[in-house]
Length: 132
Image (cartoon, rainbow, N blue to C red; front, side):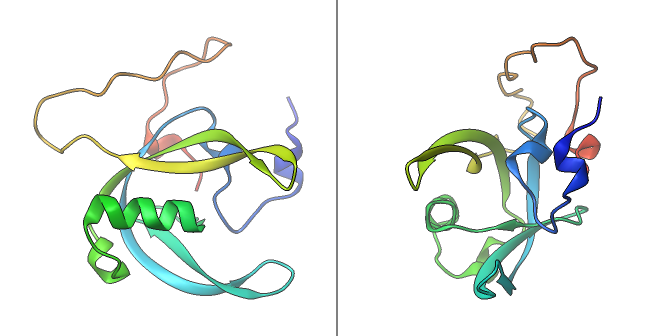
């Protein structure tokens, strides 16, 4: 079935790119890039093995700083985080956005609680299936 997001691809990760998944990713780097119509310099968070990054807003940047214990972006490299889509109010409208939370520690044997199944029966996704 055609998806309107396919007609207007973005250079950056969007909530719709997650496809309902909550992937765990590892921070590779933060670069400052000119984004948007105003070409404003913003931090863009990139992940190991992924092409698309996420343009950081203040909420996500502060969240990562809290998780890592540092406001220095170079100290975020190697941190594992979980991405998830949620709805927020922005300029009087409800929009879908990406938020960040802590990922479970690697290698501890504990498995995170899986997200609820999608409305339609689909094959399970992992972060390698997400096209960013």
